Amino acid sequence: MRHPRAHAWEAVTATAAGAGLLAGLRTAAGYPMLSAPTLATAGLGLAAGGLMAYEWLSPRSWLYGPVFWHAHTTERAIALTFDDGPCHPYTEQLLEILDREGIRATFFQVGNNVRREPNLAAEVASEHVVGNHTFTHPHLVWSRPGTVREQLMRGQEAIHDATGIVPNHFRVPHGWYGPQVISTAGELGMRCVGWSVMAWDWDRPPWDVIQRRILHGVRPGGVTLLHDGQDTDAFPKADRSHTIAAVPHIIGSLKANGYRFLTLPELMDLDALDPRQPGTRTR
Image (tube, rainbow, N blue to C red; front, side, top):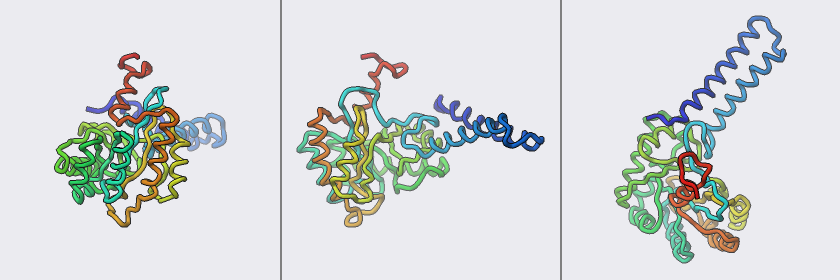
């Protein structure tokens, strides 16, 4: 079943194509290219096309279907999420920190890494929420629906084999959601997830830079993105020591500022209580 928002992006597509065609026809008919009607029509087409391109590549996409990236709330609550694991020894170190702090987080695991370290994947799933991050961490934005489906299903299979869990949350690698990615995930019963703040920690900046970037962007209802692995590369290439060093400082600072930590499903439940959300309960 197609998501109702498919009609929205179809309308935007029609607007972009129609405006471009009309501007071209006016020019071909001899109207000045710089006339106000032609410029306005071309501008409308460019704006619609730009919106389509932006939403195709956005981790906060809304045009092609729902992507959850924050909760509508004024409550100081956030979800910590980690991508690309499991990866020894950083995932174990992260689990120790979270256990010490009494925090449950959400881990988007790569199926190939789960195959490599099934026991570690199971340890994560025993205490935290696990999501699907594909099987081999490819760019899916231009992929055909069949390729998207294969990546998601192989990821599901690997995670289920190791943990006994079938994830119902999905984060696309690199954050680029095309319409075929969102629709395929929905057909497989998975909700797409983006983020509200990240630290670009895959580039291994110093731990204090990671901390500063996260704290600067945190807002009530936010979803943070950090990494406990790297694509499908295992230790020692996947050096996440700077991220691990930053996490206790991030948690300490957020706790000092009155934040509490939720898993993604819990944050989604909080979002569902917002009276601005159609068809949801009020507080």
